[in-house]
Image (tube, rainbow, N blue to C red; front, top):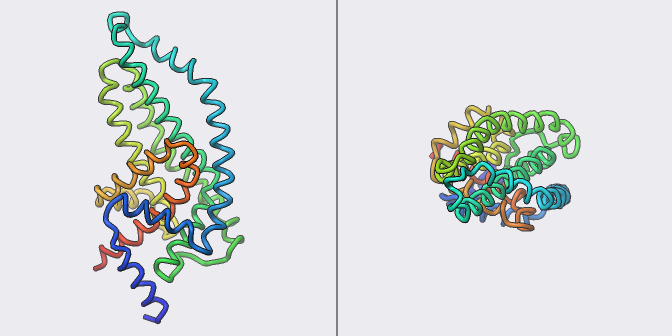
Length: 258
């Protein structure tokens, strides 16, 4: 092992990360590192435009959505309207938060793939693929978009089932918890998929990798999901999540080989 690799290995051992907060915090640290900022600025501009559009659209539609949902409430439960109104409102906000992340990731996925690759190289001293700069960015566009569509195909049928359960009075109390747990799981898969894809790991193998590390996986996804619902902060949360997920991938794989 050469000197550079030894120094890189020392950096990895010094990470000493174990939970979601550790990895997410590491992500915010990494986005400030020289050499990574350029891959943060472009997605940040994209995220700002998407966020503005979604806030504008949702503000106009929120009222009509609430009216539609409240119409599902049977007359005999009308006295509980004060309880279901905030539940439905929170459900809409949670759905919009995930939609924001999904759209931002679909459009910015080539940048995030390269950002993940640069982070992995910084942490290990070795890039998972060939480092061809902007030529590489153009080359991975079709693959990255295809991978995002694969994740959407996994997400949509399950989200639709939870959405149906969420509008059924009584059951929606449990559905809200299930929705939060599933969305947190999806956030982990969403972001850890970038380093997994760079290392030619299939989506099925990624799910097994994450499920074998339940606490760091779910705690990381929960933090990302909560921060994604915070206006303005969510603009930088996406690239930070990519960096944190790459640290997760590198560190958890290192533990496995020890």
